[in-house]
Image (cartoon, rainbow, N blue to C red; front, side):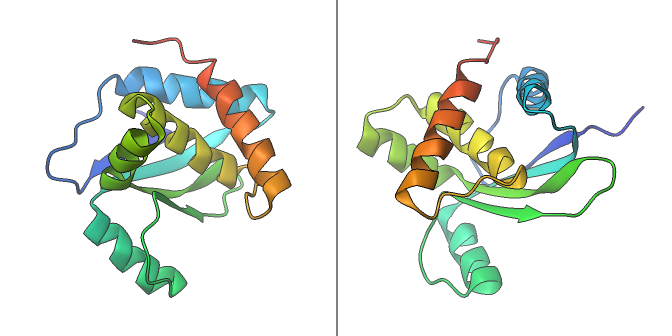
Length: 143
């Protein structure tokens, strides 16, 4: 059996991801329409506590984020590790009055967009990133 281009790992005790094959196809399709090939994207879904420790360890940040993205050079295509705090996603969805699944998919797309070279440090970059996320969300073709 061939290695999956996109894998999912679960550190969060209650979170389970549905429609994994559809999500893989969606992310591959979106990257492809932007001229990129994905090769080795590893999602880790975690708790706030796990995310806080990762922020401290890797970025010397003592605060929570919903996502951390770690690019990994690969001649075969875009690769990297994407750490997502399910606790942050759920809280952000509630605060923003968004559907939790839509917020999760937005954050998943956001991570791949970072691996593709998109940044969000400035207001202009944030606006561009949000536009790209919306565009990718519009291409979902699964329940």
